[in-house]
Length: 174
Image (cartoon, rainbow, N blue to C red; front, side, top):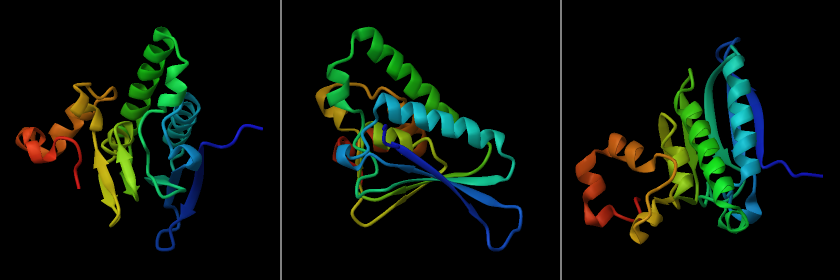
């Protein structure tokens, strides 16, 4: 049986009879919620379903473990062909853009690490809430690798180009 890499639930507002919140929980604790093909496909399907549900007033994206998301699943990626990697990156970009363009407010709740693709995913939400142990960053930039899902554009848009170029903030943002 395939494990659920992303869980979805709805919470009904106590103060408004018609308002519901969609809770999307990343659920790959053994891989620190690394972005696998299955996880991203499941996330895309959930976002698509939420968009059709008029009762959902906000989306909360969180994790079931102590890491928000460790980025791309590099173990899975090692076995992919160039074409499969390209298809995966395309799927990830479409999924992240769908979250970014959601018709309702979106919130990421980040506990632990949100690195690489994990930070890129959180940058697609309208608001990010970081716990006391949260560490976020685009570590691939230290290796001269461009983040694959729009992180450099979204981060610069959020905090400004001057901050993104500041050497103190190059690999990890606190």
